[in-house]
Amino acid sequence: MASIPAQFADPSLQQQLQSARALKTRLQQQSQVLHSGIAALDECFAQVGPGDLVEWGIPPGKNGRLIPLQLLKNQIPLSLWIYHHHGLGVFASSWISHGVDLQRLFFISAQDPVRELRPIFLEDTFKRIIIDAPARFSAADMAFVSQQARKQGQIVFVIRHYFLSGKRGNPHASLRLNTWQSGKSSFSLQVIKGARQGRITLPYPAVAEDHASYN
Image (cartoon, helix red, strand yellow):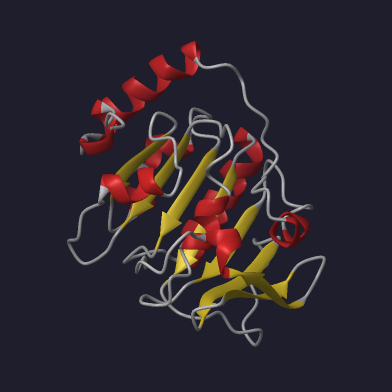
């Protein structure tokens, strides 16, 4: 059975940062290139690199988070998943079963991430930051996070709890897309803004081994 790192359940921002800084000095530097091993998905993210912000539409109940999870499996740099799900916690064994290395991925809960976790965005400890459905995240917050991503050489994902629309733009995002599970045979990506726009289909076995629910 895989062990659970102490930092996985640590709610303290300062303790999270101290653990991550110490771990950073022991880990070999890893590439910032986003890589999943799924050709169509990697092609979609080929132009995304350090300093970029990705806005992602993933309504709950559609298993869409299995797609960004594919980009967190292959020798990732230290990364942070900031979540807010109506008081729900994180089920560690589920992440492990999907192949995520919990020695490299930290978790912390925040309703208002920029206000509550500002020190995280002011340093480059975490090279990938996933801001998952924040309760409060203003246009000014988006501008600040985007500016810091460029300054610190980070890749930031902002996940929304609804499908994004092409009618409303986001000048700070280099890539905007929606993802969801299509029946029991495939997953769909709809790219609204990016080098390659339109719908992309991924076969289910390329993403997950079974049909377990994962929001």
